[in-house]
Image (cartoon, rainbow, N blue to C red):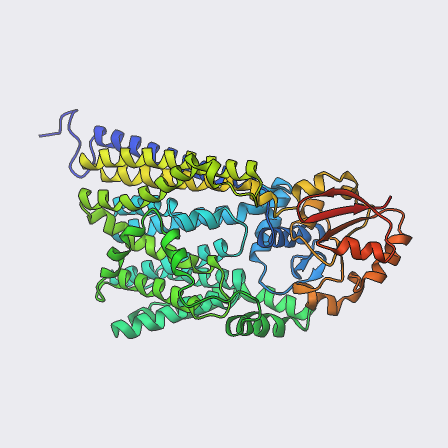
Length: 559
């Protein structure tokens, strides 16, 4: 008997089911678009700050202006501390969108979105559509992923590349377990390794390689090594990495020693970069950075050794934490690559948790944000004499607004949890926390301007004239060349420029007397100084007037 018009043939969804699926898909895409807007729009609303943001924006701008995409230059001087993937991404964004704070940070923002997409897709493939949705949302609400995706540094790009490798290994292993030996995901893992090397050097190989070895030894299972697709994988890795390393070494014979020895082994083993810290240095950043999910960390160590994906994620996260904890060079963002693994571990745990357990879990972030609300209410008492009251109050007001937003979202989440709507509860908490962190970042811009030259440069229009030389005397602000849109001439200042200054001595002025002589000979000039340098120059006979100053910096021009 043929099916009636109201019935669908066997094996096919009914028209109503197709319509419902279409509506679900539409809302999913609209939600992803809204998340992308929330994620990307704030990138250009704050001034770049020194040192990292200014440094990497200036490197990208230098590549764009010079047209040399092989040899990195910082403020016009050779700079071989890191590979060029971040610089290429920034320069390409500036070429397409124009030079701005937004285009300078766009690479980090897109890298963060790529990380979220990879985490969501991988959880979907491993554990189902609902778990994938939870993973995407929890990642979007994780403090350390949000912050580092909205700050210009190398770590968001490195994290995205390593997440590609991590997800490629997991999905490649799944394909092998299902009898498919030629998974494209294993080649994606090789591409992730290559991009990680182009992002930050050998650490892009060391972390995944060490995790593969340690995990195989722990489980006494080496089958993943047979699924690695060594031939095409190594070829793909070489095609991505070798051209730049070959070209930059051919043009700069000193590159290999400086990059591989000084910037890798010396940096890791020696405390010469003033970035040391105790072995527990990263623990506070882990606890704060995993908010609002910090209370769930004990759930994540329950992974059984027999479960490949979960045990691999545990080894990955633990190794990243230990590796950087014993390093002689520490910065808070170094442990960022462990957070995608934590999010992937968290997603199935949230899916399996009871509404009551999730409700208890929300108490910790609610208490943290409640502390922010109290700080806002006590703003007049908390603002000290050593800070700008208006700037401090603006920050506390932003934190207060973010606190009200999150506490309201928490109340809504508890309401939904009581009715068994866990997905809605997780989503509202994640988005509210993401928005709260971004509001706090924006409110911090007053302090950020104190570590940026954006307003200082705008106060002296003469500095923006390409015909007027600009000098940085015994000090240097990493954002200065970016906001000037051109390099400055360093005077009696070395720091990370020593390598380039030794090889191109004509690009800087090594002493104050030489600078004074050149200043007197030039018809115009602008000089950036800090501290007591102005008094020293005055004693040497420098003729100049103060064009702009703030609490610690001065811009001089010729009278």
